[in-house]
Length: 430
Ligand code: PLP
Image (cartoon, rainbow, N blue to C red; front, side, top):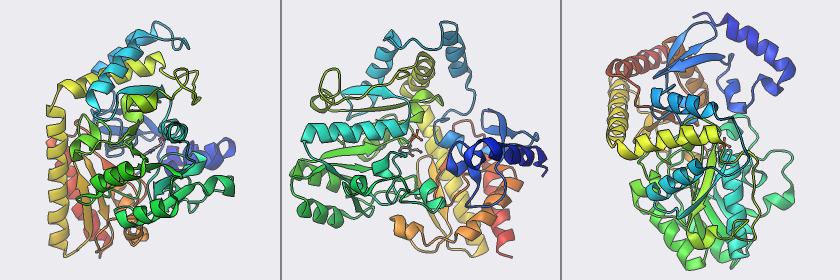
């Protein structure tokens, strides 16, 4: 496979962009080699600057649920562009998308648009603090909530891959208000709540973790969090930046039947445009300025182009239940294919999956939290990753990521993924 153009672009990029990339995980640091520079994508395929094509399993880290350059979304964006790119003033489309989100996501009665998942989580914590009058919050080890200072503590995927879970620049004063508990461990949460009476404003969790690889909540975990939050007057926040509108049209909260007090949403609601949102119960969201005292703002928030893309995408997700059937079926087929491949090869690696999120962990033990995930053989994953790339399959370049499937994958694409997985596993174990 010739990737000379990507190599020379990466060499050039490093002179003007830190590490040659605008977000660390793109740099291929944990798997070695040179990142691919992408020229375009359509449906289930991405194309690099050397003209190679790949079956797409990153999908912009989640949002391209319907595949790339979906004709209806593209048309909506083209249409909106003609009316200018930004006003910094209210538009009717913002109401439409807010009403749609409120109707789709069980926990959301009011919603505020921001520009990224990071802004959504930072703002949600601020509002929870304002609402409760408390300072601390509990974060789950291995969950990633963007790069806000108080979240860069045991932060999963990118941060782990870069070997800097506690980033320089985060002050001890900030870090001391972030309490940590392992995923799937209710006892640890209970201890923290008992040790910090009336001090904890919120618990924030990915209801299915996607940032330590895909890790599912054990039976009763999410409900247990709900009960503990009720008992201690703590705001429960589900960070659904990855799971929202992906696991079901109401996200993981609908899928698992547990309703948090607040939810954070991200890239998916922009159909790929830079967007985030946070929302929740009316009585909490009424604390947000200008209605309430907690300040939060954004010049480009509710940007008309992002809203046009997002509204079109969410309308499709809301009215076409076959989208979720297809995602479920595709996820199941790929999982089954992976399992059969492992069995034929006599390998016992762990596969975690739910709906259209899947991770093959290079470890024989169960993966229920971040410590378990870290037992994976990341060097072997690196070989697997490059082997898959050679076979034309584009995965997230880290063991601590999930595959994100789209409805654009055809039967042939699915067979190709399963076949490549088998061939590559066979090769790297020879
Ligand atoms: N929360 C979760 C669960 C995420 O996966 C991410 C990003 O991947 C974020 C928050 C941050 O979102 P963004 O990268 O848009 O700031």
